[in-house]
Each structure stands twice: as structure tokens, then as C-alpha cells.
Length: 409
Image (cartoon, rainbow, N blue to C red; front, side, top):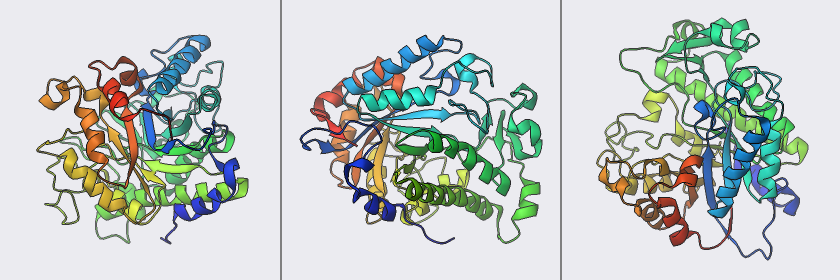
């Protein structure tokens, strides 16, 4: 595949002055604020963060969403990563996929309002960036296509999906699937002034013991040029990332608009025992080998604007030390122009094991450690409900120790 560098368009876009700053977002006065990503993931799958439950009225859902945005502002955060396509569905009136079940309790039922449109406007009113968070391939948290909305694409194309681990997934090995999921996701970008397109850590699914992902037919049809199935699967995901970046650049140039593209992968690309270029970790999952996501390549090729590795271990962890992974990612992005933000496991603060999570100062120490590396441009916290609840005061400690003033992303 031909190399395409997202940063090349970014440089040109910045030359177009303030009109290409975040669409509708407030521009800080005086230009004195520091530039730092301070983000939060706002998950909708399973009603994890929002809406708190299905079947709330539109007014109740809007009130809850405003509250999450206000909480972000109070904690001096500046970016919300809103999950708008959690299970091959949509939080906007999509031309491709049905309304999300997490709004009304029934997939395909019109909620009576447009959550994505509302979210972008409310975020920008508060000076927050709004990045649209998509899961590319997850279809359902069950394996019964009959439970999907009657107009769901899977009903028309049952050959597009693979049941695995109690869930349904689009098959990344089918070129028509890769094109479709891009169309479905970028429909949101076409119609709403989102500031970014954001993928999480799910590409091929996480391994499930005793099961295999049945893509034999797709491999027979499309994998002939590859020595191994793993190499073919990685190429499928590489193409998803590369093509999405190219389409965002092309659309941005046509519209005079800048939409940033980023991924938040599981933080271990490969253990050093598997590859000398890998991290000195002993993680049971490696994105390259198990999720077939060559995250290091995406950074080194410049296909991303930013990467947010989920470094969800404490300082000193034996399996995967925060103090090992942050410098590994700093070295990986160095010289690429790809921004590095660190994903932080706020949701683990207060857990009994490992003991480090019981210390409310653990996350604050993370930020102190990461400041040693100039490549680290900020942090993103999982997730919004944990910012609001802050069960052991870890987020309050971060704000007190590190977020004394406002910052632009």
C-alpha cells in the first residue's frame, strides 16, 4: 500500500488560521493556555456511561448528557470521545444502520431526537472537542441474527458475520464488509461537525479459549497472496486504517475541514520475547498476534493523527509496567508526527488487586511519570461515569496536582 501521512494535510490545514480549529468550539482567549489532551471516554455500549438505562425520555437523556459534559468541564478536561456506533448501530439517523438499542431498548426504534447532533452542539458550546468513537466490526453481544432489527444489514447479508465468543462480528476478511463499515462510520462525519474519528481496541476479537474465528471461506477467496492467515488478517486491518485515513483526508480537502483520526489500542503491541522491537512486558495478549492489529506500523507509517494506548496497569506491574510502556510508546511515535496520549484506567482506582489501585495518588503519579517524555501530549480517562463518581478521589487528585488551569487539546 502507498504510504499516506495524515500529518501532511494537518500542516496545510493549520495554515488556514483559526477557521480550521475545532468546528464550533470556543477558542481560548489570550492564547496563553497550554496545549494538552485531557480527554474522557463516554461509552454507550451496554448503557455503561450513557444513557444510564434504555427507555429514558429524550429530555432525561439530554439532561444526563449535559451533566457528563459539565462534569468534564469542571475537571478541566477538554475532549469527549463519545461512542456513537457501539454495535453496528447508530446514535444518529444513519443511512446504513439502525438506531442503537441503547437509546430505546429496541434496536431500530427512533428515539425522537438526534443524539449526535445534540452532543456536538452541546460539547462545542462548552469549548469541548467531540470525537466520534466507533467500533468497526462488533455487531452484537449475542449470536442470534434474528434478534437484530429487521432492517439490519446482517439480515440482508448473513454471510458477512461470524459468531465467536458469544458475539457476532462483521468479517474483516471480506472487502465488501471493509467498504461498508467505512461508509457507515463516515456517514456521521459527513453530516456532523465532529472533531475526530476514533476507533477503540477491537479489531479481530480478543481470543476466546477453545474457539476459532471461522473465516475459512474468506481466506480461501482472498488470502491467496499471503503465507499465513495471520499476515492476511493483519493486512485486512491495515487496509481498514489506511483507507479510512485516506478518505478522511480526501473529504477534508474537499470541504476545507480537518477531522483528526486516532486509535486507542491495547497497549502491548508485542512482548520483547516475541519481537526485539516489542516492549519488556509479559502480557497475555499482543495486538499484533492476537487482534491482528499492527499498531506500531500505523504509527510509523503516519496513518494516524494520534494514538491512545490503553496503559491500564500501575507503575511497577510485573506483567506490563506503566513505566515500561509509556517510554516504549514515546519511542514509537518519536519523529512520526503522530500525537501520543496515554489511556488511563480511572475505572480501576479503588480495586482490591493489585494493591496500587487502592492508592488515590496512583493516577497522579502516572501523569508525573509521563511528563518525563516530551512525546506524551496528554491523557484520556476511562470512563465518564468514573470521572463523575470518582470513588476514591483519584480524579480529584489528578486535577489538583496537574490541571491547575485550562488547556487546549
